[in-house]
Image (cartoon, helix red, strand yellow):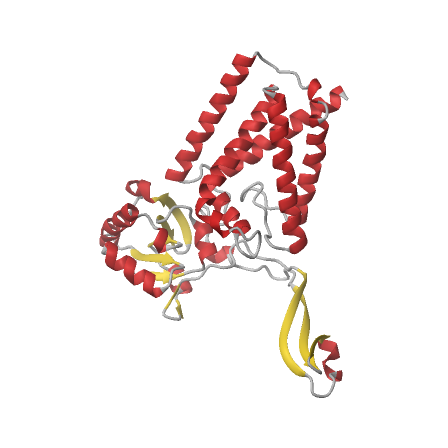
Length: 366
């Protein structure tokens, strides 16, 4: 048991630290994931959505600190109760997501490692087993150092985590694991290789028969009962085919698609604000001033947002913006960049620079 506890302590501690640091590298991305969980169709807790970022930072910092405390053997009773409560909650959450197919990626390891809901649940079950071993054998968890050294180490870890969180929120993630990282060609990222597997769906047709709804497969349509009235079609995914890394990116305006034209521009700058109502006013002021400088050097300058026309016009009037905004899916824009607004520089569809609005002075214009 002594060796099993030692292994469990090492395994759980290291995994919590790695998982926490990966999410701390991109707390804004983790907050977007929490917003999905808080949505009405998942946990039905929309009142928590405005606090998603604060909760995200607290959770990931606490996760790292717990991992450090476990490895050090610091305050084992508090540490073990905290680990147990946290893993029980996340095991419930991943099971709920998997069973009801609510959130397709738990965000446990951010964008560094994508897990399916059932893979996330399995991971949490394994962690729960090891944490239970530790919980019931707390007497075997001996501190590595004195209480003073342990407390100081935990405090330093906590302080460094807070600094890292503050830094990445005011700049950008230290490591970009997303599909839109610098060096990516968006056109190539949207390509589907020849011979790639296609998604397979089962088509089910719902008809009203004698006042009651009945479901028929496509093969049963030839034998529909007399007087059956079509209600709807439900498509069930049987097997998912190949999905390119970039699959929901577009550049649209007034119902017209400009994606191909814009991605062929030799010098293009996109100011991204997935939601203009949440865009930083100082940031918008800076990108407006920068847009004139970029245009003078031959750059095509556009804004990208998922906001509606009314919101766009209000934002342009309030902030005296002179560049045009184009529409793109909000999830895609959140994936491209975390700051609101942010700056993305492209050369014929290849991302050459990505910066937070705080770092707009570092953009290199050719």
